[in-house]
Length: 271
Image (cartoon, rainbow, N blue to C red; front, side, top):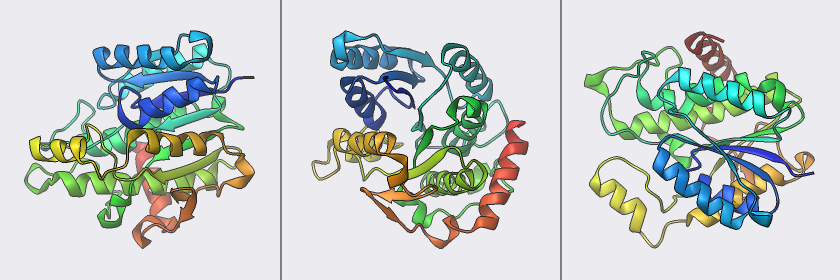
């Protein structure tokens, strides 16, 4: 039986590379993206790689709008009686302070609150499956305040905000493993990936053209491995660098902080 794999942030980079590889293995891949044009192009690429040219499903959602996340979940619940893998891969760096329509700083919402909400809404379909969260080694300098999802325009810096979001991914993964023992939850650092990542011309140029960076194909292959390896071979709640579990920074391993973040996130998204 083919697996059903939902990948957010599937329009480019790691998500698209993983979707293409999974489709080539015969999995039923569901692409989620924000930009309609890029999403359509990604669907064409995945279709070309799919076994027998199977049409991949696709849904548009903007993670800076929590109602988009809720509508996405409704459509996925209606379409799939079970979901084998949810790859929470959407997110990124935002150049300047922006507050979403939901009232939260856009970086923490798109990188943490939106995938947190989506995972909760799909939980019944994920029983016996797994959740793979794209984190980053950037969390090493990303301590966060679970009591503050709003921030301040005057104090906003794009890199620390992104790093804090990646810390949230790791804390969420570990706490999900404690609270949902029937779902295998893992996080990973994909490498410093050559992609359209970043904010600002110089940052985007560095990430897009630096030949020394990890290719999306290599990073996507790691996501694929975490999505398909036997669950008993993975560390539940673990943070992976390459194919080995690694110990995150101390601020990303504290169970009390993880529980506090969970409770604050639940209140923020209305779960």
